[in-house]
Length: 255
Image 1 (cartoon, helix red, strand yellow):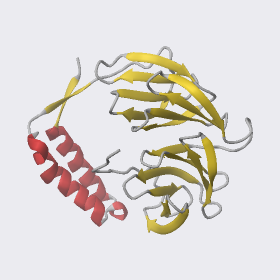
Image 2 (image 1 turned 30 degrees about the vertical axis):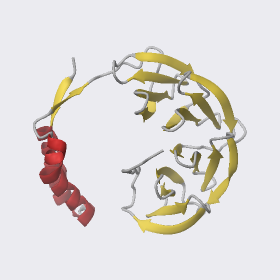
Image 3 (image 1 turned 120 degrees about the vertical axis):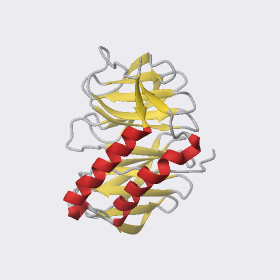
Image 4 (image 1 turned 90 degrees about the horizontal axis):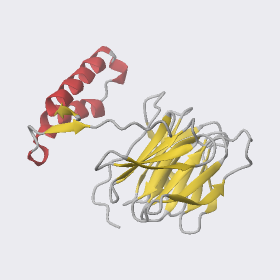
């Protein structure tokens, strides 16, 4: 049975984060202050769920899966996909029952996984094989393997994301400081987007409604904004140094 997770615990966590920011003033910015205020004062009133408790369910990935590293959810099919970097496979979890439906073999060192909710196709980035395993989410089977570079080379692709409206997949390449573009309709590469050399892009997020891609780079104090139509850099946004992850909240998405 799952453990209840109350909003009061969320508020306690948020308050702790607020105190941390007060003690680390370099991290204390207007956006973080607004986050704390919204979390404490506004979030509890959303959709009338003030006193609702949430159940936390633990799912064992093993013994078939080892060291889950990347995860993605297809809300339409109630399936969660976990990339297991040591066992070189993908665990498929039924989020309604918590059962492992299947463990799908992929190539070496899967580190990132993304789902197109419009087509229910899953993309697994295999770091040491320099490949992407394309998986049919309905059949839970690999239907194609896309090669990004020669296996065993020094190239390390470490993240990918999908735009469900354009059916384009974007892959970060820290070694060359590029973003590679994959056409989801044909599973063929459609070119690369150059970033400043040495920036080492390591994470990305996409807004499908505006067709903009946001790139976070390890060696840069900026977030790069890319236009998905022209595949060109349109803006740069400042972010705190040593940021390691980026996420997007998209509302009103329609297929």
